[in-house]
Length: 124
Image 1 (cartoon, rainbow, N blue to C red):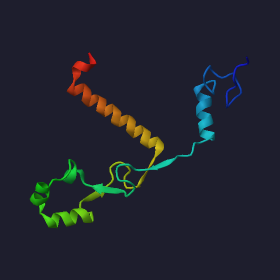
Image 2 (cartoon, rainbow, N blue to C red):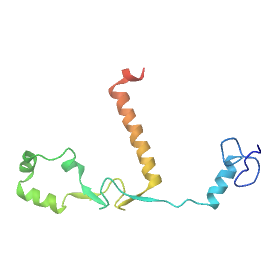
Image 3 (cartoon, rainbow, N blue to C red):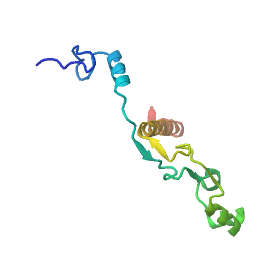
Image 4 (cartoon, rainbow, N blue to C red):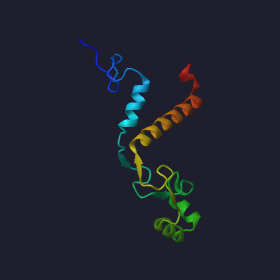
């Protein structure tokens, strides 16, 4: 069986790869850029804003609403007076799927760090 050819220079490709070296892979990517796919931001549901987490980060109870001003506060809250630009998409309403993947990796790494701090005995 003949070895597979490199997509860029036609030299034999490394086993299991489309290219013979990293230089060919990078050059190929420059000449054939992948189009980004966008998905609606799951933090703001495509609105570009969300309520300030300092206001309702853990949810609001009726006692919280009364403490913060009662019906006046509730009306302001529902009108979006406490909204801030989305911290995930920056107000763009969509996220590049490559960015979304990277954010997920970062969130997973942060969660793992927190778990290591909270339960170090699990990682002995």
